[in-house]
Amino acid sequence: MNSPEPLLDPAEAEVLRRRLPQMPAVNLGRRALCDLELLMLGAFPGLRGYMSRAQYEAVIADMRLPDGSVFPLPLCLDLPGAVAGALEPGQELALNDQEGFPLAVLRVDELWKPDKQNEARAVFGTDNAAAHAGVRRFLTETGEWYAGGILQGLHLPMHHDSLDLRLAPGEWRTALERLEWTRVIGAHPHGLLHRVDREVLLQAAREADASILLLPAADQPFFVDADHFHKVRCHRAFFSHLPNGLARLGLLPLAGRGAGPREVLLQAMVFRACGCTHYLVTPDQGEPRPTNGARHYDPGAAMELLEQHAAEIGIAPVPARAFRFHARKRHFVPAAEARPGDVDCPPSPEELDTLLEFGRDVPSWFVFPEVLEQMRRAHPPRHRQGFCLFFTGLSGAGKSTLAKILYVRFMEQGSRPVTLLDGDIVRRNLSSELGFERRDRVLNVTRIGFVASEIVKNGGIAICAPIAPYEEARQANRELISQYGGYVEVHVSTSLATCEARDRKGLYAKARAGLKKGVTGVDDPFEPPQNADLALDTTGVPPEDAVRRILLLLEEKGYVR
Image (cartoon, rainbow, N blue to C red; front, side, top):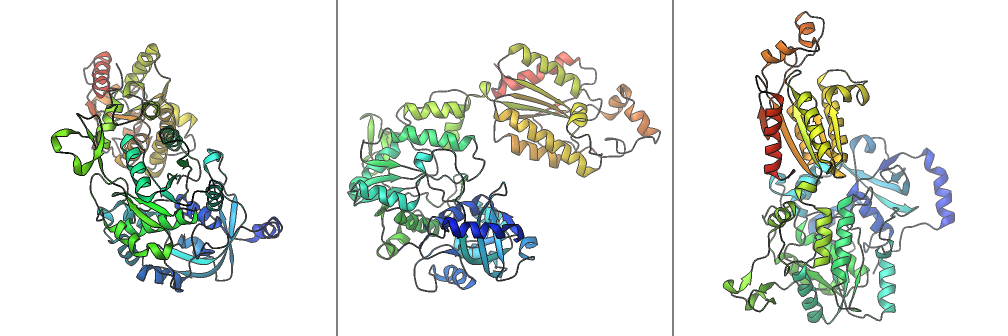
Protein backbone atom coordinates (compact mmCIF):
# COMPACT_ATOMS: atom_id res chain seq x y z
CA MET A 1 0.00 0.00 0.00
CA ASN A 2 1.44 3.40 -0.93
CA SER A 3 1.66 6.25 1.54
CA PRO A 4 -0.36 9.43 0.94
CA GLU A 5 1.77 11.90 -0.96
CA PRO A 6 3.10 14.61 1.41
CA LEU A 7 2.57 17.40 -1.14
CA LEU A 8 0.41 20.12 0.40
CA ASP A 9 -2.58 21.57 -1.42
CA PRO A 10 -2.03 25.13 -2.78
CA ALA A 11 -3.75 26.92 0.15
CA GLU A 12 -1.73 25.03 2.80
CA ALA A 13 1.46 25.51 0.81
CA GLU A 14 0.91 29.27 0.65
CA VAL A 15 0.50 29.49 4.44
CA LEU A 16 3.74 27.53 4.92
CA ARG A 17 5.64 29.67 2.39
CA ARG A 18 4.94 32.77 4.49
CA ARG A 19 6.91 31.21 7.34
CA LEU A 20 9.94 30.32 5.19
CA PRO A 21 11.95 33.54 5.87
CA GLN A 22 12.04 32.70 9.60
CA MET A 23 13.19 29.08 9.08
CA PRO A 24 16.71 27.66 8.90
CA ALA A 25 17.34 26.07 5.51
CA VAL A 26 19.63 23.55 3.85
CA ASN A 27 20.44 22.99 0.17
CA LEU A 28 20.19 19.29 -0.66
CA GLY A 29 22.70 17.24 -2.63
CA ARG A 30 22.10 14.81 -5.50
CA ARG A 31 20.94 11.75 -3.59
CA ALA A 32 18.88 13.73 -1.07
CA LEU A 33 17.03 15.54 -3.88
CA CYS A 34 16.17 12.23 -5.55
CA ASP A 35 14.93 10.82 -2.24
CA LEU A 36 12.89 13.96 -1.56
CA GLU A 37 11.21 13.85 -4.97
CA LEU A 38 10.16 10.21 -4.57
CA LEU A 39 9.02 10.84 -1.00
CA MET A 40 6.81 13.69 -2.19
CA LEU A 41 5.44 11.42 -4.93
CA GLY A 42 4.53 8.68 -2.44
CA ALA A 43 6.91 6.15 -4.00
CA PHE A 44 8.26 4.77 -0.72
CA PRO A 45 5.58 2.62 0.97
CA GLY A 46 4.96 3.34 4.64
CA LEU A 47 6.75 6.72 4.74
CA ARG A 48 5.33 10.25 4.83
CA GLY A 49 8.66 11.79 5.72
CA TYR A 50 12.13 10.89 6.88
CA MET A 51 12.54 7.95 9.24
CA SER A 52 12.53 8.32 12.99
CA ARG A 53 15.40 6.87 14.99
CA ALA A 54 13.30 3.83 15.92
CA GLN A 55 12.43 3.23 12.25
CA TYR A 56 16.07 3.71 11.23
CA GLU A 57 17.37 1.22 13.80
CA ALA A 58 14.68 -1.35 12.92
CA VAL A 59 15.55 -1.12 9.23
CA ILE A 60 19.28 -1.47 9.94
CA ALA A 61 18.65 -4.50 12.13
CA ASP A 62 16.23 -6.58 10.04
CA MET A 63 14.96 -4.57 7.03
CA ARG A 64 11.57 -3.88 8.60
CA LEU A 65 9.83 -0.84 10.02
CA PRO A 66 8.56 -1.12 13.60
CA ASP A 67 5.06 -1.97 12.29
CA GLY A 68 6.56 -5.07 10.64
CA SER A 69 6.41 -3.90 7.03
CA VAL A 70 9.40 -4.49 4.77
CA PHE A 71 11.76 -1.58 4.14
CA PRO A 72 15.33 -2.48 3.18
CA LEU A 73 17.30 0.80 3.42
CA PRO A 74 17.35 3.68 5.91
CA LEU A 75 15.85 6.87 4.56
CA CYS A 76 16.85 9.77 6.81
CA LEU A 77 17.84 13.34 6.05
CA ASP A 78 21.58 13.64 6.66
CA LEU A 79 22.83 17.03 7.83
CA PRO A 80 26.23 18.59 8.44
CA GLY A 81 27.08 19.38 12.05
CA ALA A 82 26.77 23.14 11.54
CA VAL A 83 23.15 22.79 10.40
CA ALA A 84 22.16 20.14 12.93
CA GLY A 85 23.73 22.12 15.79
CA ALA A 86 21.35 25.02 15.15
CA LEU A 87 18.22 22.82 15.21
CA GLU A 88 15.99 21.52 17.97
CA PRO A 89 13.20 18.92 17.88
CA GLY A 90 9.92 20.56 16.91
CA GLN A 91 11.62 23.14 14.71
CA GLU A 92 10.90 23.47 11.00
CA LEU A 93 13.69 23.17 8.41
CA ALA A 94 13.33 24.36 4.80
CA LEU A 95 14.69 21.92 2.23
CA ASN A 96 16.00 23.68 -0.88
CA ASP A 97 17.36 22.63 -4.23
CA GLN A 98 20.90 23.59 -5.20
CA GLU A 99 19.83 27.08 -6.25
CA GLY A 100 18.17 27.76 -2.89
CA PHE A 101 14.60 27.27 -4.12
CA PRO A 102 12.44 25.80 -1.30
CA LEU A 103 10.87 22.46 -2.18
CA ALA A 104 9.61 21.23 1.18
CA VAL A 105 9.62 21.80 4.93
CA LEU A 106 10.64 19.14 7.42
CA ARG A 107 9.15 19.24 10.88
CA VAL A 108 12.16 17.95 12.77
CA ASP A 109 10.91 15.38 15.29
CA GLU A 110 14.29 13.81 16.06
CA LEU A 111 18.00 14.51 15.63
CA TRP A 112 20.70 11.96 16.29
CA LYS A 113 24.28 11.11 15.40
CA PRO A 114 24.28 7.62 13.84
CA ASP A 115 27.02 5.02 13.93
CA LYS A 116 27.83 5.24 10.23
CA GLN A 117 30.35 2.39 10.37
CA ASN A 118 27.66 0.11 11.77
CA GLU A 119 25.23 1.33 9.10
CA ALA A 120 27.79 0.61 6.38
CA ARG A 121 28.30 -2.93 7.71
CA ALA A 122 24.55 -3.58 7.73
CA VAL A 123 23.54 -1.87 4.49
CA PHE A 124 26.57 -2.57 2.30
CA GLY A 125 27.75 -5.76 4.00
CA THR A 126 31.09 -4.11 4.79
CA ASP A 127 32.65 -0.95 6.20
CA ASN A 128 35.71 -1.21 3.98
CA ALA A 129 35.53 2.07 2.11
CA ALA A 130 38.80 1.46 0.25
CA ALA A 131 37.42 -1.66 -1.42
CA HIS A 132 33.83 -0.54 -1.93
CA ALA A 133 32.89 2.55 -3.94
CA GLY A 134 29.38 2.70 -2.44
CA VAL A 135 30.74 2.73 1.12
CA ARG A 136 33.32 5.36 0.21
CA ARG A 137 30.64 7.68 -1.17
CA PHE A 138 28.38 7.01 1.82
CA LEU A 139 31.06 7.75 4.43
CA THR A 140 32.42 10.85 2.70
CA GLU A 141 29.35 12.45 1.12
CA THR A 142 26.74 12.14 3.87
CA GLY A 143 26.44 14.41 6.88
CA GLU A 144 27.28 13.30 10.42
CA TRP A 145 23.75 13.90 11.80
CA TYR A 146 20.39 12.44 10.83
CA ALA A 147 16.99 14.13 11.11
CA GLY A 148 13.61 12.44 11.05
CA GLY A 149 10.14 13.92 10.85
CA ILE A 150 7.03 14.66 8.84
CA LEU A 151 7.55 16.17 5.39
CA GLN A 152 5.41 18.98 4.02
CA GLY A 153 5.91 19.27 0.28
CA LEU A 154 5.71 22.67 -1.40
CA HIS A 155 6.93 21.99 -4.91
CA LEU A 156 8.47 19.07 -6.78
CA PRO A 157 12.00 19.56 -8.10
CA MET A 158 11.74 21.38 -11.43
CA HIS A 159 12.71 19.49 -14.57
CA HIS A 160 12.84 21.04 -18.01
CA ASP A 161 14.00 17.98 -19.95
CA SER A 162 12.24 14.84 -21.22
CA LEU A 163 8.91 15.82 -19.70
CA ASP A 164 7.14 13.09 -21.70
CA LEU A 165 9.21 10.51 -19.81
CA ARG A 166 8.88 11.94 -16.28
CA LEU A 167 5.67 10.44 -14.93
CA ALA A 168 5.04 10.10 -11.21
CA PRO A 169 4.39 6.59 -9.81
CA GLY A 170 0.67 7.33 -9.57
CA GLU A 171 0.64 8.54 -13.16
CA TRP A 172 2.36 5.33 -14.27
CA ARG A 173 -0.27 3.25 -12.47
CA THR A 174 -3.03 5.20 -14.23
CA ALA A 175 -1.31 4.91 -17.62
CA LEU A 176 -0.87 1.14 -17.26
CA GLU A 177 -4.50 0.73 -16.19
CA ARG A 178 -5.63 2.68 -19.26
CA LEU A 179 -3.59 0.33 -21.43
CA GLU A 180 -5.21 -2.58 -19.55
CA TRP A 181 -1.80 -4.03 -18.81
CA THR A 182 -2.43 -6.36 -15.89
CA ARG A 183 1.07 -7.92 -15.94
CA VAL A 184 4.02 -5.56 -16.26
CA ILE A 185 7.72 -6.25 -15.77
CA GLY A 186 9.83 -3.30 -14.69
CA ALA A 187 13.48 -2.76 -15.63
CA HIS A 188 15.79 -0.14 -14.12
CA PRO A 189 19.07 0.11 -16.10
CA HIS A 190 21.81 2.55 -15.09
CA GLY A 191 23.97 2.12 -18.19
CA LEU A 192 23.29 2.07 -21.92
CA LEU A 193 21.35 -0.78 -23.51
CA HIS A 194 22.48 -2.73 -26.57
CA ARG A 195 21.29 -5.55 -28.82
CA VAL A 196 21.79 -8.29 -26.24
CA ASP A 197 19.71 -6.30 -23.74
CA ARG A 198 16.77 -6.45 -26.13
CA GLU A 199 16.99 -10.24 -26.04
CA VAL A 200 17.19 -10.20 -22.23
CA LEU A 201 14.14 -7.92 -21.91
CA LEU A 202 12.01 -9.89 -24.36
CA GLN A 203 12.92 -13.22 -22.78
CA ALA A 204 12.00 -11.82 -19.34
CA ALA A 205 8.69 -10.52 -20.74
CA ARG A 206 7.93 -13.97 -22.18
CA GLU A 207 8.84 -15.65 -18.91
CA ALA A 208 6.60 -13.29 -16.91
CA ASP A 209 3.91 -13.13 -19.64
CA ALA A 210 4.07 -9.35 -19.19
CA SER A 211 4.50 -6.03 -20.94
CA ILE A 212 7.62 -3.96 -20.22
CA LEU A 213 8.03 -0.72 -18.25
CA LEU A 214 11.56 0.52 -18.89
CA LEU A 215 12.53 3.20 -16.36
CA PRO A 216 16.26 4.02 -16.57
CA ALA A 217 17.86 5.93 -13.72
CA ALA A 218 17.72 9.73 -13.95
CA ASP A 219 19.62 10.60 -10.77
CA GLN A 220 20.90 14.06 -11.74
CA PRO A 221 18.14 16.24 -10.29
CA PHE A 222 19.88 19.57 -10.84
CA PHE A 223 22.19 20.99 -13.49
CA VAL A 224 21.90 17.84 -15.59
CA ASP A 225 25.07 17.48 -17.64
CA ALA A 226 25.78 16.28 -21.15
CA ASP A 227 26.06 12.66 -20.02
CA HIS A 228 22.42 12.67 -18.87
CA PHE A 229 21.14 13.93 -22.23
CA HIS A 230 23.38 11.47 -24.07
CA LYS A 231 21.94 8.57 -22.08
CA VAL A 232 18.36 9.70 -22.68
CA ARG A 233 18.98 9.94 -26.44
CA CYS A 234 20.48 6.44 -26.39
CA HIS A 235 17.55 5.07 -24.37
CA ARG A 236 15.10 6.55 -26.86
CA ALA A 237 17.07 5.02 -29.75
CA PHE A 238 17.15 1.61 -28.04
CA PHE A 239 13.44 1.80 -27.18
CA SER A 240 12.55 2.21 -30.86
CA HIS A 241 13.76 -1.39 -31.38
CA LEU A 242 11.30 -2.93 -28.90
CA PRO A 243 8.07 -4.37 -30.39
CA ASN A 244 5.42 -1.71 -30.86
CA GLY A 245 2.78 -1.71 -28.15
CA LEU A 246 4.70 -4.02 -25.83
CA ALA A 247 6.72 -1.49 -23.82
CA ARG A 248 6.73 2.00 -22.31
CA LEU A 249 9.78 4.18 -21.64
CA GLY A 250 10.24 6.66 -18.80
CA LEU A 251 12.78 8.07 -16.35
CA LEU A 252 12.96 7.36 -12.62
CA PRO A 253 14.76 9.74 -10.19
CA LEU A 254 15.96 6.91 -7.95
CA ALA A 255 19.51 7.55 -6.74
CA GLY A 256 21.94 4.65 -6.92
CA ARG A 257 23.68 3.72 -3.68
CA GLY A 258 25.66 0.61 -4.62
CA ALA A 259 24.05 -1.18 -1.66
CA GLY A 260 23.61 -4.57 -3.34
CA PRO A 261 20.60 -6.82 -2.61
CA ARG A 262 18.99 -4.36 -0.18
CA GLU A 263 19.01 -1.69 -2.87
CA VAL A 264 17.51 -4.03 -5.47
CA LEU A 265 14.69 -4.81 -3.05
CA LEU A 266 13.99 -1.08 -2.63
CA GLN A 267 14.00 -0.64 -6.42
CA ALA A 268 11.41 -3.42 -6.76
CA MET A 269 9.19 -1.74 -4.15
CA VAL A 270 9.33 1.57 -6.04
CA PHE A 271 8.45 -0.25 -9.27
CA ARG A 272 5.51 -1.82 -7.45
CA ALA A 273 4.39 1.71 -6.62
CA CYS A 274 4.55 2.43 -10.36
CA GLY A 275 2.16 -0.43 -11.10
CA CYS A 276 4.55 -3.27 -11.99
CA THR A 277 3.80 -6.87 -11.10
CA HIS A 278 7.27 -8.21 -11.91
CA TYR A 279 10.83 -6.86 -11.67
CA LEU A 280 13.87 -7.75 -13.78
CA VAL A 281 16.95 -8.61 -11.71
CA THR A 282 20.34 -8.47 -13.45
CA PRO A 283 23.55 -9.99 -11.99
CA ASP A 284 25.25 -6.59 -11.55
CA GLN A 285 22.23 -4.78 -10.11
CA GLY A 286 23.02 -2.91 -6.91
CA GLU A 287 26.78 -3.04 -7.56
CA PRO A 288 28.62 0.20 -6.82
CA ARG A 289 29.90 1.99 -9.88
CA PRO A 290 32.58 1.93 -11.20
CA THR A 291 33.36 -1.66 -10.26
CA ASN A 292 36.62 -2.00 -12.26
CA GLY A 293 35.65 -5.60 -12.86
CA ALA A 294 35.42 -6.45 -9.15
CA ARG A 295 32.25 -7.90 -7.64
CA HIS A 296 31.11 -6.94 -4.15
CA TYR A 297 27.96 -9.07 -3.98
CA ASP A 298 26.99 -12.63 -4.85
CA PRO A 299 25.22 -12.35 -8.25
CA GLY A 300 22.34 -14.47 -6.96
CA ALA A 301 21.89 -12.71 -3.60
CA ALA A 302 19.49 -10.03 -4.88
CA MET A 303 17.31 -12.60 -6.61
CA GLU A 304 17.20 -14.69 -3.44
CA LEU A 305 16.24 -11.70 -1.27
CA LEU A 306 13.44 -10.63 -3.62
CA GLU A 307 12.06 -14.16 -3.79
CA GLN A 308 11.90 -14.23 0.03
CA HIS A 309 9.80 -11.04 0.11
CA ALA A 310 7.91 -11.25 -3.21
CA ALA A 311 4.51 -12.14 -1.75
CA GLU A 312 4.78 -9.48 0.94
CA ILE A 313 5.78 -6.58 -1.31
CA GLY A 314 3.52 -7.66 -4.17
CA ILE A 315 6.06 -7.92 -6.99
CA ALA A 316 7.75 -11.03 -8.38
CA PRO A 317 11.43 -11.06 -9.42
CA VAL A 318 12.44 -12.36 -12.83
CA PRO A 319 16.12 -13.19 -13.49
CA ALA A 320 17.88 -11.71 -16.49
CA ARG A 321 18.90 -14.69 -18.62
CA ALA A 322 22.35 -14.58 -20.20
CA PHE A 323 22.68 -14.54 -23.99
CA ARG A 324 25.67 -14.84 -26.32
CA PHE A 325 26.05 -13.90 -29.99
CA HIS A 326 26.52 -17.03 -32.09
CA ALA A 327 29.15 -16.27 -34.72
CA ARG A 328 27.93 -18.82 -37.27
CA LYS A 329 24.19 -18.48 -36.72
CA ARG A 330 24.52 -14.68 -36.57
CA HIS A 331 21.99 -14.23 -33.79
CA PHE A 332 21.82 -14.38 -30.00
CA VAL A 333 21.36 -17.71 -28.26
CA PRO A 334 20.96 -18.60 -24.56
CA ALA A 335 24.38 -18.79 -22.92
CA ALA A 336 23.71 -22.41 -21.87
CA GLU A 337 23.42 -23.42 -25.54
CA ALA A 338 26.59 -21.66 -26.71
CA ARG A 339 30.00 -23.30 -26.84
CA PRO A 340 33.09 -21.05 -26.37
CA GLY A 341 34.23 -21.47 -29.98
CA ASP A 342 30.84 -20.49 -31.37
CA VAL A 343 30.42 -17.06 -29.77
CA ASP A 344 31.80 -13.59 -30.38
CA CYS A 345 32.79 -11.85 -27.18
CA PRO A 346 31.33 -8.37 -26.66
CA PRO A 347 33.83 -5.56 -26.06
CA SER A 348 34.39 -4.75 -22.40
CA PRO A 349 33.51 -1.20 -21.27
CA GLU A 350 37.21 -0.31 -21.44
CA GLU A 351 37.55 -1.78 -24.94
CA LEU A 352 34.40 0.04 -26.08
CA ASP A 353 35.82 3.33 -24.79
CA THR A 354 39.02 2.70 -26.77
CA LEU A 355 37.09 1.92 -29.97
CA LEU A 356 35.16 5.17 -29.64
CA GLU A 357 38.19 7.25 -28.60
CA PHE A 358 40.18 6.25 -31.65
CA GLY A 359 37.27 6.17 -34.11
CA ARG A 360 37.47 2.43 -34.73
CA ASP A 361 34.62 0.11 -35.76
CA VAL A 362 32.26 -1.22 -33.11
CA PRO A 363 30.81 -4.68 -33.94
CA SER A 364 27.44 -4.21 -35.62
CA TRP A 365 25.99 -7.23 -33.81
CA PHE A 366 26.75 -5.56 -30.48
CA VAL A 367 25.04 -2.17 -30.83
CA PHE A 368 22.09 -0.74 -32.74
CA PRO A 369 23.21 1.81 -35.38
CA GLU A 370 21.01 4.58 -33.93
CA VAL A 371 22.52 4.02 -30.47
CA LEU A 372 26.04 3.97 -31.91
CA GLU A 373 25.37 7.26 -33.67
CA GLN A 374 24.49 8.85 -30.34
CA MET A 375 27.52 7.28 -28.68
CA ARG A 376 29.83 8.71 -31.33
CA ARG A 377 28.21 12.14 -30.92
CA ALA A 378 28.82 12.05 -27.17
CA HIS A 379 32.25 10.40 -27.38
CA PRO A 380 33.90 11.59 -30.59
CA PRO A 381 37.34 10.27 -31.50
CA ARG A 382 40.20 12.00 -29.72
CA HIS A 383 41.16 14.14 -32.71
CA ARG A 384 37.70 15.75 -32.45
CA GLN A 385 37.50 15.94 -28.66
CA GLY A 386 38.37 18.90 -26.55
CA PHE A 387 41.60 18.63 -24.61
CA CYS A 388 43.71 20.61 -22.17
CA LEU A 389 47.43 21.11 -22.58
CA PHE A 390 48.61 22.06 -19.11
CA PHE A 391 52.12 23.49 -18.72
CA THR A 392 53.74 23.72 -15.30
CA GLY A 393 57.21 24.91 -14.30
CA LEU A 394 59.19 27.78 -12.84
CA SER A 395 58.90 31.36 -14.05
CA GLY A 396 61.24 31.72 -17.02
CA ALA A 397 61.21 28.00 -17.84
CA GLY A 398 59.66 28.64 -21.26
CA LYS A 399 56.02 27.79 -20.63
CA SER A 400 54.51 30.93 -22.13
CA THR A 401 56.71 30.78 -25.23
CA LEU A 402 55.73 27.18 -25.97
CA ALA A 403 52.07 27.90 -25.21
CA LYS A 404 51.96 30.86 -27.60
CA ILE A 405 53.58 28.91 -30.45
CA LEU A 406 51.16 26.02 -29.97
CA TYR A 407 48.24 28.46 -29.81
CA VAL A 408 49.24 29.72 -33.27
CA ARG A 409 49.67 26.17 -34.64
CA PHE A 410 46.21 25.10 -33.47
CA MET A 411 44.62 28.32 -34.72
CA GLU A 412 46.18 27.72 -38.13
CA GLN A 413 44.67 24.23 -38.23
CA GLY A 414 41.22 25.67 -37.42
CA SER A 415 39.81 22.31 -36.36
CA ARG A 416 38.68 23.41 -32.89
CA PRO A 417 38.35 26.66 -30.93
CA VAL A 418 41.52 27.44 -28.95
CA THR A 419 41.92 29.41 -25.71
CA LEU A 420 45.23 30.45 -24.15
CA LEU A 421 45.16 30.73 -20.34
CA ASP A 422 48.60 32.15 -19.61
CA GLY A 423 49.54 32.54 -15.94
CA ASP A 424 50.03 36.32 -16.03
CA ILE A 425 46.86 36.92 -18.06
CA VAL A 426 44.79 34.84 -15.63
CA ARG A 427 46.26 36.68 -12.64
CA ARG A 428 45.21 40.02 -14.13
CA ASN A 429 41.73 39.05 -15.32
CA LEU A 430 40.52 36.15 -13.19
CA SER A 431 42.48 36.19 -9.93
CA SER A 432 43.50 39.82 -9.43
CA GLU A 433 42.41 39.79 -5.76
CA LEU A 434 44.51 36.73 -4.85
CA GLY A 435 47.88 36.87 -3.18
CA PHE A 436 50.70 34.34 -3.24
CA GLU A 437 50.06 32.32 -0.11
CA ARG A 438 49.61 28.58 -0.71
CA ARG A 439 45.83 28.79 -0.37
CA ASP A 440 45.60 31.59 -2.95
CA ARG A 441 47.96 29.83 -5.35
CA VAL A 442 45.85 26.67 -5.16
CA LEU A 443 42.65 28.67 -5.72
CA ASN A 444 44.19 30.41 -8.74
CA VAL A 445 45.07 27.07 -10.35
CA THR A 446 41.64 25.69 -9.45
CA ARG A 447 40.00 28.59 -11.27
CA ILE A 448 42.15 27.93 -14.32
CA GLY A 449 41.10 24.27 -14.16
CA PHE A 450 37.41 25.14 -14.01
CA VAL A 451 37.62 27.47 -17.02
CA ALA A 452 39.66 24.85 -18.91
CA SER A 453 37.11 22.14 -18.08
CA GLU A 454 34.31 24.22 -19.60
CA ILE A 455 36.39 24.78 -22.75
CA VAL A 456 37.21 21.06 -23.03
CA LYS A 457 33.60 20.07 -22.30
CA ASN A 458 32.53 22.10 -25.32
CA GLY A 459 35.09 20.58 -27.67
CA GLY A 460 37.77 23.29 -27.50
CA ILE A 461 41.50 23.28 -26.81
CA ALA A 462 42.61 24.91 -23.55
CA ILE A 463 46.31 25.78 -23.31
CA CYS A 464 47.19 26.60 -19.70
CA ALA A 465 50.57 28.00 -18.68
CA PRO A 466 50.65 28.88 -14.97
CA ILE A 467 53.51 28.06 -12.61
CA ALA A 468 51.10 25.74 -10.70
CA PRO A 469 53.68 24.81 -8.05
CA TYR A 470 51.62 22.33 -6.03
CA GLU A 471 50.78 18.74 -6.96
CA GLU A 472 47.49 18.95 -5.03
CA ALA A 473 46.01 21.55 -7.39
CA ARG A 474 47.42 19.96 -10.55
CA GLN A 475 45.97 16.57 -9.66
CA ALA A 476 42.57 18.10 -8.92
CA ASN A 477 42.60 19.73 -12.36
CA ARG A 478 43.53 16.45 -14.04
CA GLU A 479 40.60 14.70 -12.36
CA LEU A 480 38.15 17.50 -13.21
CA ILE A 481 39.12 18.06 -16.83
CA SER A 482 39.57 14.37 -17.69
CA GLN A 483 35.83 13.90 -17.17
CA TYR A 484 35.19 15.92 -20.33
CA GLY A 485 38.10 15.22 -22.66
CA GLY A 486 41.85 14.94 -22.86
CA TYR A 487 44.37 16.19 -20.33
CA VAL A 488 48.08 16.36 -21.15
CA GLU A 489 50.49 17.73 -18.53
CA VAL A 490 53.86 19.07 -19.66
CA HIS A 491 56.46 19.80 -17.00
CA VAL A 492 58.80 22.42 -18.39
CA SER A 493 61.63 21.24 -16.17
CA THR A 494 64.20 23.93 -16.93
CA SER A 495 66.60 24.42 -14.01
CA LEU A 496 66.35 27.33 -11.59
CA ALA A 497 69.80 28.53 -12.67
CA THR A 498 68.67 28.80 -16.31
CA CYS A 499 65.42 30.50 -15.30
CA GLU A 500 67.34 33.04 -13.20
CA ALA A 501 69.76 33.69 -16.08
CA ARG A 502 66.78 34.50 -18.32
CA ASP A 503 64.81 36.49 -15.68
CA ARG A 504 63.04 38.68 -18.25
CA LYS A 505 60.68 40.08 -15.62
CA GLY A 506 63.32 40.77 -12.98
CA LEU A 507 61.40 38.49 -10.62
CA TYR A 508 64.36 36.53 -9.29
CA ALA A 509 66.55 39.63 -8.94
CA LYS A 510 63.91 41.23 -6.71
CA ALA A 511 63.61 38.03 -4.67
CA ARG A 512 67.38 37.76 -4.17
CA ALA A 513 67.49 41.41 -3.12
CA GLY A 514 64.74 40.83 -0.56
CA LEU A 515 62.31 43.08 -2.42
CA LYS A 516 59.77 40.34 -3.24
CA LYS A 517 58.52 37.42 -1.18
CA GLY A 518 56.87 34.17 -2.18
CA VAL A 519 58.81 33.61 -5.41
CA THR A 520 58.57 29.98 -6.51
CA GLY A 521 61.98 28.34 -6.50
CA VAL A 522 63.53 30.92 -4.16
CA ASP A 523 61.49 31.13 -0.96
CA ASP A 524 58.43 29.14 -2.01
CA PRO A 525 58.63 25.47 -3.06
CA PHE A 526 57.90 23.93 -6.45
CA GLU A 527 56.61 20.37 -6.16
CA PRO A 528 57.69 18.42 -9.26
CA PRO A 529 54.78 16.67 -11.00
CA GLN A 530 54.31 12.99 -10.20
CA ASN A 531 52.33 12.14 -13.35
CA ALA A 532 53.54 14.51 -16.07
CA ASP A 533 52.99 13.20 -19.59
CA LEU A 534 56.16 14.92 -20.77
CA ALA A 535 59.14 16.61 -19.10
CA LEU A 536 60.95 19.24 -21.18
CA ASP A 537 64.14 21.05 -20.24
CA THR A 538 64.35 24.03 -22.60
CA THR A 539 67.97 24.83 -21.75
CA GLY A 540 69.67 25.26 -25.11
CA VAL A 541 66.67 23.83 -26.96
CA PRO A 542 65.08 25.98 -29.68
CA PRO A 543 61.38 26.54 -28.96
CA GLU A 544 60.34 24.96 -32.28
CA ASP A 545 62.16 21.74 -31.35
CA ALA A 546 60.33 21.61 -28.01
CA VAL A 547 57.01 22.29 -29.75
CA ARG A 548 57.67 19.43 -32.16
CA ARG A 549 58.09 17.02 -29.23
CA ILE A 550 54.78 18.17 -27.77
CA LEU A 551 52.95 17.80 -31.09
CA LEU A 552 54.39 14.29 -31.55
CA LEU A 553 53.11 13.37 -28.09
CA LEU A 554 49.65 14.76 -28.92
CA GLU A 555 49.65 12.82 -32.20
CA GLU A 556 50.65 9.62 -30.39
CA LYS A 557 47.78 10.10 -27.94
CA GLY A 558 45.37 10.72 -30.83
CA TYR A 559 44.45 14.36 -30.04
CA VAL A 560 45.89 15.76 -33.29
CA ARG A 561 46.30 14.27 -36.76
